[in-house]
Length: 306
Image (tube, rainbow, N blue to C red; front, side, top):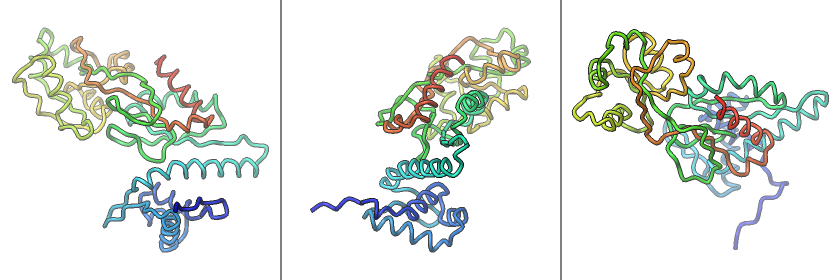
C-alpha cells in the first residue's frame, strides 16, 4: 500500500525554511545564525521534514555536510516556493512598489567578470522587477544545486536540463606585446620552449592538461610544458601574463578588450578546440517562470552579439 500524499494542512513551512537555510549555508551552525534560532531547534526542524518524507536529506559526516540525492531533488522546488512567497508577501505589503523576483544565476568567474557583469546593468534596467544574485564557483561541469539559471564551462553533456550552447571555446596563445617582440622570428615550438608556461586548471584534469593537449595536437613530440604556474581561473592566468612574462592558452573571446587595446597580443595565429564550451542550463519546468524565461532569452541574444 503506497504512502498517502502530503496535503496543504501538513506542509511544514518552518521545517522547509530550515532545510533551505542549511543547504544554502552548508552548515547547521551558520544556518541557525542566519535564521536567528538555536541550532538544536534547526536540527529538529530538519529531522521533522525527513521523518515526514521518509528519506534522509543530508549526509552528515564529521566536519562535512552534503545533500543526498533526495535533498538535491527537493531543494530547487523549495527555493522557488519560498522565493515566490517572499515576492508575493512583499507585493501585498507594498502595493505601490514593483514586485521583485530574485534570480540566482551561476556563472564561471572569468565569464562573469569579462562578459556577463558588464552587461547585467542593461538587463536590470530593462527588467526592474527582477533582481539577480550571481554565484561564481570554480571548476567545470554540472551546475550547483539551488540556482535558477546556470552558465557552465563543460563538454557536451547528457542531461535532463534545457541546454543552450552560448559559444564553443576556441583557445589561443596570448602574451604581453613585449614578449612577442623579444622573440620576433621564432617558430611556435621554439617560442613555447623558450618561455614560461601559464596554466589554467580544468576541473579534475591533470594540472598541465590544456597545454599538454595543445602541443600534442600541434605535433610537437617531446616538447615539455610541465612547468610554470597553475591558476584556478583564466582571468588570474591572464593577469599574470599582463605582467610581461609567460604565455597563456585561453579563450580569446573572453579577452577581446585586452587584444583591442594592445595589452595582450596573439604571437601566433593558431587555435585549439578541446571540445569545451559555455552552456546555459535551466530546469525544464523553470521555463514557465517568466523571469527565468526572460533572462534566458536576453542572455542568448546578447551572447550572440558580443
